[in-house]
Image 1 (tube, rainbow, N blue to C red):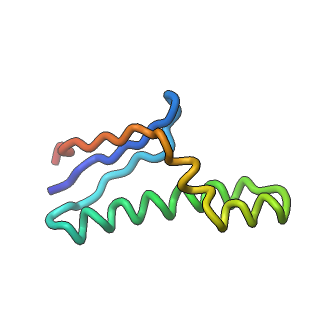
Image 2 (cartoon, rainbow, N blue to C red):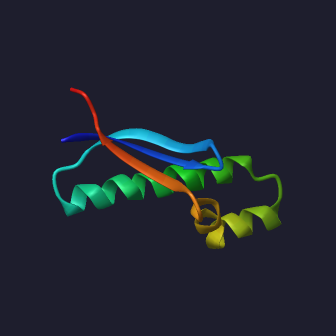
Image 3 (cartoon, one colour):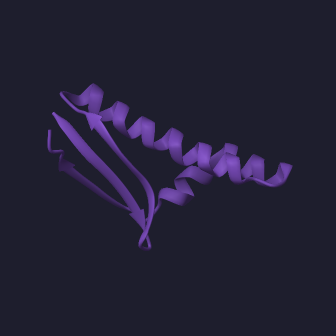
Length: 76
């Protein structure tokens, strides 16, 4: 089934995308895609080596902490 996955924090969208979810592996793959997208967005916004090291270590967890996750069936 096609699902819409949205992640918001403090009213701002961190991620929105559609994924095919049919089992636990495809569900996990959807969230792996979220992790990669959030991490890449942070990497693209870095302006110093120190900031880059923070992103590489655990910045993604910090950014996702407290976020709201919404999953809904997408219309086909």
